[in-house]
Amino acid sequence: MMLESALTLFVAVPLLAAGLLVAVASRTRLVLSVLFVVLVAQLAAAVATVPSVSDGSVVVHQVALWAPGVAIPFVLDMFSALMLTVTSLLTLTCAAFAVAAGEAFKRFYPPLVLLVTAGVNGALLTGDLFNFFVFVEVMLLPSYGLMMITRSGRASVAGVAASRLYISVNLLASTILLIGVALIYGLTGTVNIAELHGAASEDTAVAVATALVLFALAIKAAVVPVHGWLARAYPKMSPAVTAMFSGLHTKIAIYAIYRVYAVIFDGDSRYLWVGVVVFSATMLIGVLGAVGEAAPRSILAFHMVSQIGYILLGVALFGPLGLTAGIFYLLHHMIVKAGLFLAIGAIEVRYGPRRLGQLSGLAKTEPLIAIAFFASAMSLAGIPPFSGFVAKLSLIIAALDAGQIAAAAVAVAVSILTLLSMLKIWTGIFLGEPTATDSRTLPEGLDPAYSDAPGIPDGRDRAGLDATGDAASGGAATSTVATATAEAGAPDPVMVPPGRRIGLALAAPALALAVVTLALGLGGQVLLELSGTAAANLYDPTGYVQAVLG
Image (cartoon, rainbow, N blue to C red; front, side, top):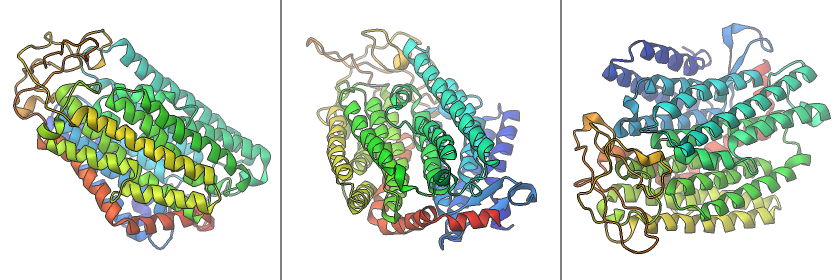
């Protein structure tokens, strides 16, 4: 089958597999087997697409073989091929973590993951604004279900509020997006991205309508000042869901911002200063927000906002260097941030959600997770030889080349603050002597992972499950609580399971992504060249437009 015709399979196969898994949801082994077969096959197919477009070519399939301009086009270029590859890798990795953590055994978890996958793939491949909106909704609706079914224990007020905020903000952003798309259609008579090439740079009314689309995407991407929802919602989700969402949801919005501005605005230089200001502010405010946080996942959530500013700075530096650096940074960040959330998630699965100071000495007792976290943290901060160094250096050079000295200075300053924050987590959790244990246990059935009650330690004591939540792991369900210090203001006691705490199955996903970021750092030239090809198609979208319109 030709590659053009196979593009629709990236959507069709996950959708059909999800329907099949719903029908046989009670057969756990079969369901998980199908899930991983589909995810592995998708990753292999995504990797195989990269060489096909490495020369800068664009592959187009007009769905149902309707004429160009009438059909819904599925379009594959280097940018979408790279995004397909990385999103496939992250979905597979997070699914493996979910199995180890016990989350994947929740009823309907596998089919919901496949529905999210279908939405992500469709959003990356479609060349039509309205169908981009449709696929985003296909991605979001099962995501709401994942948030609910993976929540363990009794939901707290804060947990419910965070879920409500996440859903409400995304519904609002989707409504704004749909209004923007409708206005574009009313003004131009089309929502085909290729047919809209340059329309926003030539017509002020179209520019306003397209700006509304970009605003909706900025909300979904958590750009300052519409970023607060992410910092409040992500820490309240389950570890596997947080890691998967970090690599998919905001990144689809960022991908669309790059695509829309490059094609519909045709890289219009008149508006780039707005992006430089807003994205520089996102970098700075995001990292400053992390300063006041005491929980590792809350710190990482604010840093996610900060790093989104770095990524989008690439489109504000619209040029070959800026776009190349931004795309490289996007791919690097998806891998590293998911790796950090998985590392902290593995700790939370065993010990429960913790504030800094409630655990210590994990570098000695949990060396695998310590290595995984340290590698990803150093990459996030931009320390060589990891991919973050290549990403940040490339972006700073691009900013200087574009004459944006202030933006480059902000990028350097934020990088230093990021390093300090990562060292804060490292010092607060991994250094020191291992936390002592005693025989006290939490009240039966209490899962205060989402509890707001004062004085209750965060942790898990779920009947019939071990500390991973995996009934099949064979671990003991009994956990012990660390002796609380008598000092005034001491943190809540800590739940420390006896014996080996984090096994290889829980640590492997974070370790795998740490290896990837190291490989991308040492072999950064390869990904830079591929990112350069993707950037060339954005900087001059003529090839994209001609391929779609025939």
